[in-house]
Amino acid sequence: MAIGRYRDVPADMDDVEREVAAAQYPEGGLVFGLGVGIVLPIVTIEALLLLTPILCGVGGFVLGRFVRDYEIRRRRAERARGE
Image (cartoon, rainbow, N blue to C red; front, side, top):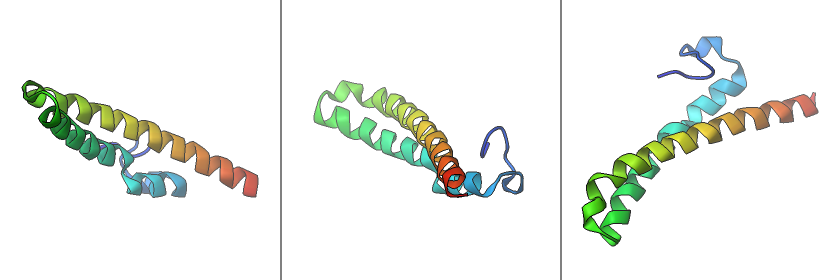
């Protein structure tokens, strides 16, 4: 799995990218989305049980990627202000 911007070797990343990659936001979003996708149809319509885990899992993963990119930008901005 690619870590950082088109890199999969942690040694090639700066410390901010390594720290944020270690938090695994996309992976956490995937697990959360899968959970929502399983619970939502059980609570509402059981016919959705096959489709919603996939859709919510992908949505959670995408949301996690956005959070990861935001965290990298935020931490770099904090570092630039602090230096």
